[in-house]
Structures are given as C-alpha cells and as structure tokens.
Length: 108
Image (tube, rainbow, N blue to C red):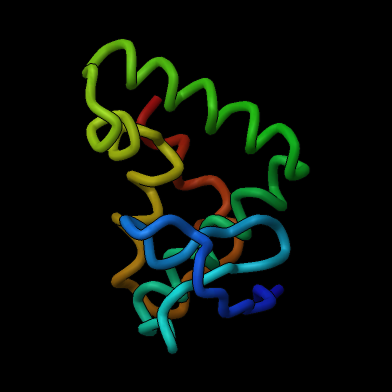
C-alpha cells in the first residue's frame, strides 16, 4: 500500500514537513524527499497493522509518558517507539511491509 500524498500550506505545523493520517500523507513542502516519503510510509504500515485507531491511542500514550518523563515536546516525540523505528528504518530501501509495521516492537 502506498500513501495518498496531499500538499497543504498550513498543515502539518511548521516544525514538521509531513504527517501521516491513514491513508493520507499531508506535507507542506513542494516535494517530499525519498527518505521522508519512506518515513511516512513506515507510519502508514504501522497504522495499518494496528488497525489505525490502536496506533493513535498508543502513539498518544507514548507521547504523554514521554512528556511527563522528559518535560520536553521534542524529547517526548523522539521517544515514541513508532518514531524511533521510522527514523531507524527510513534510510533503508526495499523494506518489507511486516518489517515496517512491527519494527517498533524492538524497543520492548
């Protein structure tokens, strides 16, 4: 499955170039780099594997725990297992869907 790309001016917020909301990738840059597209595609597969809603529930819980722990939005974001996995894999080519979907579990 490939994401549906949607270019917008005001979403996502300035600090981010793209955000995946199944099955769309909203981006505020003219064109996503290959690496950014791979990062967002990893999130797409994570969302699909967790039936979308569970992904968002877990993502929010991981972010809240990180925010309470680190008292920093950026550190909380970077501590989310889904993000750590996507950053770890985004430089690799020809990833299998199962790798993209479940690599985030490596941290547990």
